[in-house]
Amino acid sequence: MWRRHGLAACALIAAMALGGCGADDGPAAQARGGIGQPVRTADCQAWKDSGARERFETVEALRQFAGDRTGSPAGRGATLDDEAAYDLLERSCEPAYAAGFKLYKLYTRAAAFAGLRSR
Image 1 (tube, one colour):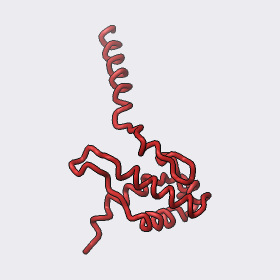
Image 2 (tube, helix red, strand yellow; image 1 turned 30 degrees about the vertical axis):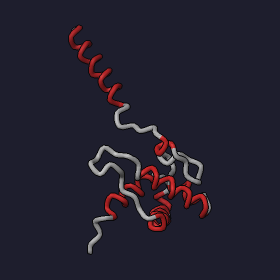
Image 3 (cartoon, helix red, strand yellow; image 1 turned 180 degrees about the horizontal axis):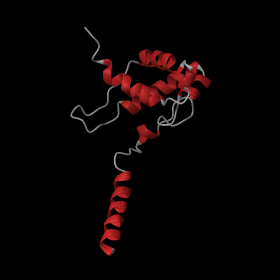
Image 4 (cartoon, one colour; image 1 turned 90 degrees about the vertical axis):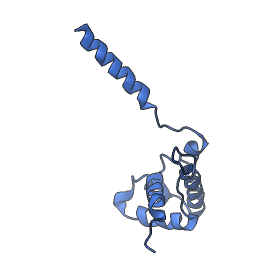
């Protein structure tokens, strides 16, 4: 019985230790866009509620966040042209069902495929 509890305790401790792995609390992760929220929490509703200036500032913060250092051989994350990113977020956030979509997820997924367009 003690062995089973000991294994469970070890598994719990390992899970707690690994829970923080991959979390980046550096300056880019804490960056705030013009909409006044950290990049990781800003969503389409915040985008819709803000003006053009705040949106462009948010696009700049997203570019810094996405283009920050990575563990990949390239060393930096993929980014989009600011105008293309603005247009992407305008289109993606337009439907009512998109209100909770996270801006950084829309941005980083689009940036990952930007170089793969048909030629």
